[in-house]
Length: 342
Ligand code: ZN
Image (cartoon, rainbow, N blue to C red; front, side):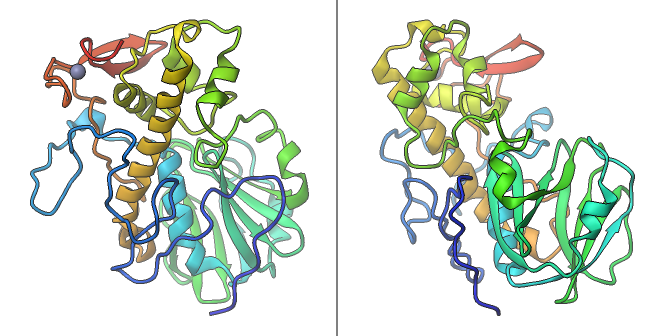
């Protein structure tokens, strides 16, 4: 395999420095707070009742409606970790643009230019996957609501809703399938990415050093409104979707409707730590399904996570036993414990 390109030193973040994904047994991820080799150590900041899956534990399967079907930050990160060792060093031989548009038009000429480009590295910003290429260009992919980016043999037949295919020198092909077409793929100058309109207004990444209670407290200054909406605001912090906002607030013991103007500084610290923990847990859990990404069997590329409150209306709170409640705000379901979230 070709040697990796050195890490780039631009301003877009790269949350994990490596992936440790070498063979089926070594599935540790350099997530925040986890050391290599500590694959299944619970975060010490907060010990909730274990609900994650062990070999001898019974699993509470999420009800149908609650299975995450939209790729969130952890899925994009696991996708990045799984694809990176397989793609870096490979070369794009040809590009097939099979549809006129996804969420935005697919720019035929700029994608065509990628023929002959070498893959230098994979990064992530919010829910965008960034594939850095030789020639100072980056291929940006967003999976939208239903996108799937998979590696298949170059000769694999075209499938329904396949919009884009990159044939690679190695004999593989990178294929973007997206039935609902909310995804996105475009080429940008690598150096200009931070000011690209898709990235310019994004807030900080939750999984990098420096994201903490101070970050949230500062963003909350002068603001009002429910903390849940605040947490899901990409200008405040990126990548905290509905599911992970519910879970982080439950872990932190904060009521989702509480006004951001009424949250003490120490509670911001707790909340930030739980955002990091819940995303890290999901990435670790997703890491156990990496074979599904890399061998082509896992067409969906999405994984289920163990959830404490999301989708569990009426079930006992794992911490205090009170039935979980659901409320709807801005068309989104919020799940919370009325007793231990204040
Ligand atoms: Zn409770």
